[in-house]
Every structure is written in structure tokens, then in C-alpha cells.
Image 1 (cartoon, helix red, strand yellow):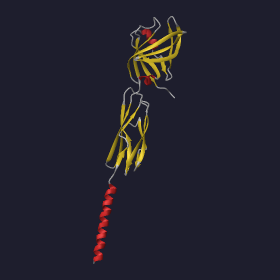
Image 2: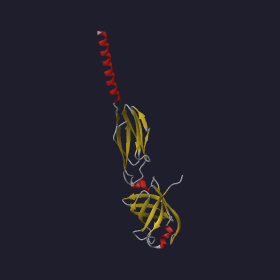
Image 3: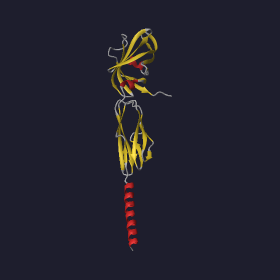
Image 4: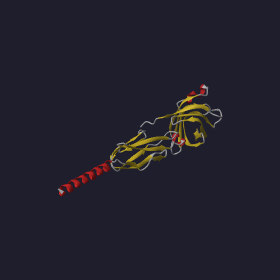
Length: 233
């Protein structure tokens, strides 16, 4: 009988130990290596380490510009966050959610706004002139090309009284405060076309446009609107 009692005690002890072990093993764990990612306007990549003993998934609240890969894992692992360049004149934020069973960890992604110089680079078309003088209507449709290397081109294809037919102006550009100057030659005469910017977004520029040649524009320029054209591949 003594042997039987010892055997039953041993079995009961082992059963309790196994139950405790099962409970400890079942306790889920999930953590991430960072809770904040900061990016410049240029964008970039960041790696996030996951410490876990369970399966997990990853999702982004703004997957159009803040992407994650892979979107799932099991146990310890790593996923990559890829942030596209920001072409907006304001900061933007996204939230990355890492979930596993009843646990959720969030990561806040903050990206700087683009600089105004970044926004200017591209091809702009004048869509309206609001001077009230129909003599300037021929300017509608003119193109201003701003390049990263500081070169610029103004495509006019108009006849300027006293000057002649002007197809384009090529030169350089600079931005000081809210004024964009494009320096080049018109019929071998040095000229500066200026855009005094009143309001701007990444798609539209409201400004006063003028040139330093006398008699062509009022000294303060005329109010015009430029829209950014999509570059076709």
C-alpha cells in the first residue's frame, strides 16, 4: 500500500507541474524596439525588431506612403518601414499597428514637410491671368520649368511688342523669401522674370508675375495662377 501512495503522489505532483508549465508557456508576449519613427521629407527606411512568443501582424494607417514588409511573423522577427518622399507643404503622420492575440503595440511615424524649393521643381503652366487687361491673355498657357540643378526654362511662343517673337527663355533660378527669379536672355538682352508668390500648394501657385524690362508689365507684376503639370513617362 505504501508503494501505491507514493506513486499516486508522484503522479499528482507531475500533473501539477505540467499544468503550471502549460500556463507559463501560454502567456503571450509581444513588444517592439521603437514606438516613434521620424523621417525627413526625403523619406527612407527603418527596421523595427519584434520580440514575441506568438504570431503577429503589421498594418499601416497610411499604406499609400508608409509601407511595411513583411506584414506578419511568428516569434522574434523584424519588419521594414518604407516612407515615400513627402511632396506636401505640411508634416504628415501615420500609425503602424503590431498585433498578436490580445496584445497591440503602436508606432507613430512622423515625416517633415517638403521645402518650398522641393515643391517648385517641376513643370508649371499658367492657367489664368487676373489683371483685368486682355492684352495679357496671350500669356495663358506659358510653361515654366524649374530643375533641381538650378537651371530653368520659360516657354512663351509669343510676340512681345518692341522685342519680337520670343519662343523661350533659358537660364537659372533662385528663390529668396517669397520671390522666384528666373534669369536669362531675351533676344540677347539680359532679363529677369519674377514670380512674387502670394499663396502656394504643391499643385497651385498664386503669384504676381513681372519682368525687369520696362513697359512690359507693371512694376509689381500682374496676378496669375500656375498649375503643376504631371510629367508623362
